[in-house]
Length: 449
Ligand code: IFM
Image 1 (cartoon, rainbow, N blue to C red):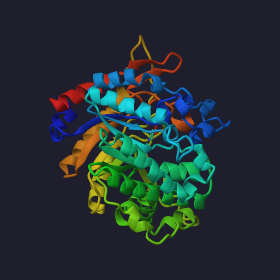
Image 2: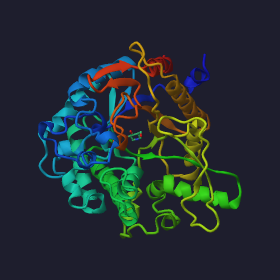
Image 3: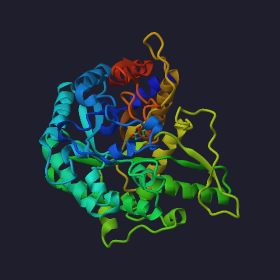
Image 4: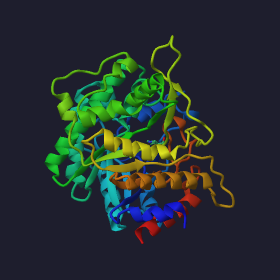
């Protein structure tokens, strides 16, 4: 028996064993059944924005193959599936006229999942903002927060009889920073004030939608998913601890503090050089009690202070790179246990956790129709063990969703990075299960037996 298998006893029978995906990364069918364009359609079609100019036009063709993909999930034995809804399929221009055909797709997906005994958990925003809303300022515009709440209410009214767990946003850090500061993601803006404002409006939209959904469906369990990355100082010296604190604000506290303390960290202006918007009452609204916090964990950082003659941020990243994924992300499973335990102690108001994403891209090789992805298996095994280690320390963790069921469109990196436990041949759309799929299936069976 492996160490992990010995620890499976720690996972309760209600534990959610899942896989995760998102609409734009897998669905394709971007002009079908009345779907409107999103910011990612425009961005990925803009020369120079994605590797090889790739886009999500076809992706994994999941829009047409969802039934086959759900059969794969059934074969895998997952109890849950995390999907996201494409806002522009429901509201092609972001608001008002609802697109019945777009909603019909998610209706069918939910029913097919349930008929296979797989419980859906839905993310409402995984980065595909309707382009029409971007033309009115997107997340820079406070109105978008209210429009998002209307969309959330529509979704809960339509599917809430069958879907009980809802995630408002996936990784608002990426929306705010990658989308509006570094410009690596859609809408490709590079402006500190816009980034900090967008973050605020995303947080506000999270809270307004939580309130709207609760008013519509009293048994809805609602949370938000943050991508979190713990930070270790190079050593306990005061200057390196200060550097670690700043990086922690940047990676984590920018969103954690408003959500669970009702305030922004005081160091935020040191990082961005600007202040978040101050609207009376917003911070109290943002601090909505939640049913769970979704955590996406991939890696951690070790940092040191910059040379004395430089600004305090950015700090110096000295994370060891002896074990990295194809993304270049250092593999640090113990960072996940640290993160979970620290959050529990640092935020008294924090709800139970669900690991809504964890997984790794590696350079897979198809050999005689097989993919022996041993590094991915090791990555997954080490991280699930880290979840168990946090449980031993008293942390309430309700689920683990592997990213991702199948290889898919990795945003600005196009199809160059493969995170799936199912290989996708993008020319034929053939799916081939990798060794990691068989490994995860075995693990789930053991855990549930
Ligand atoms: O593919 C992404 C996903 O959309 C959000 N979380 C991280 C994944 C891997 O980069």
